[in-house]
Image (cartoon, rainbow, N blue to C red; front, side, top):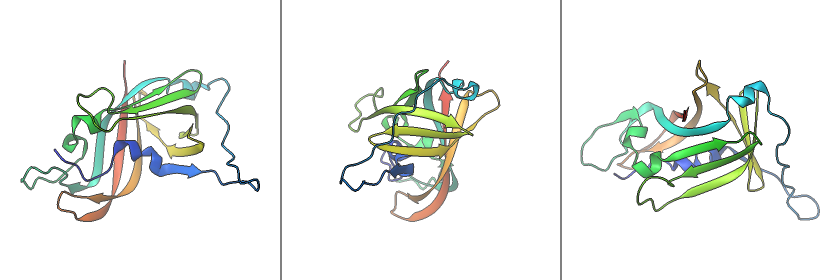
Length: 172
């Protein structure tokens, strides 16, 4: 199965805000997040696996010679593309992994840094940058999701805009 949509590893990276250089031509990296977790932040501690990717527009991402567009992008992705995990620690550290556990993945991603959650806004530091994404928890805080508007390219090379919702589920 071939996908032309986007790499899961670039999802959060699309939200990255790079810190500008100072007058010394050095890069001023943001400081790591520190301190005790709030009660709201405590619900994010643990391992979260990618469980759903849904678009508002139907799209066919599979190169299977069948016209079968769907809003379920997750179902059209390969095992390696669906293999995405966030692990949030009590010490504010996080690790994001993609393609680490599925078999024969050529493209593997691992990113780590620190995190904080303020007013449902998840902020991550990594690679001298801060990314910020509004997330929403389900009623029992076992899933969180976020939405972004993307240029989506189908298997035939047609590109259009669509809102895409990514959902991560807490591993019990």
